[in-house]
Length: 255
Image (cartoon, rainbow, N blue to C red; front, top):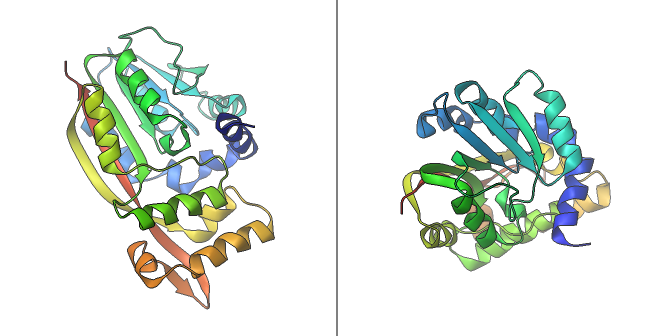
């Protein structure tokens, strides 16, 4: 089973959790999205790896149409049911690294909290550039790793233990390099520390005690520098909360 099959399997099984997940359904990034993008009723928007459809839902009232895409059919069907009141959202099964759209189709492209599941992020960014109109905007939000290699290794291993469909969180420097290679110029950005409730985070993908306990012990055994960087909060020997880095950015296709 390859990495994309893993994504389909995990998100099919957990399709309801991603509609209601506090990490995905809420957050001030959704509130900021409209002001950063400045949408208008003439625009066509592509939401890549829509998941629970939260970005699509936020933008739909302000634009002409939104194409909400996802590689996982069961996830997309569930999201369509959840968002059936939004008549201008269209649903398309699509691979983020091989989009089924013509060149220069969209005024805006969004991708929120998903790219760490993509095996080939360079192909994803090439596809964003290809389908985006000149001067179009790309809103990107994802978990990132620090530039310190061992901190980055810790987080990616942790995420893989919790969710085998996880591929890799990139650093901001890595994303910036891919943007520049594909004529995407950063016009607004924000670095954030995202607080995660440990119980909600682990229950979203793991359901058996032995797998959960393996993750928990891995975190408890992390050295003090790592625990400090990721801001572990513990009570009675149990992880209660921690933080990860997140990058929110709008880039414009300037040729």
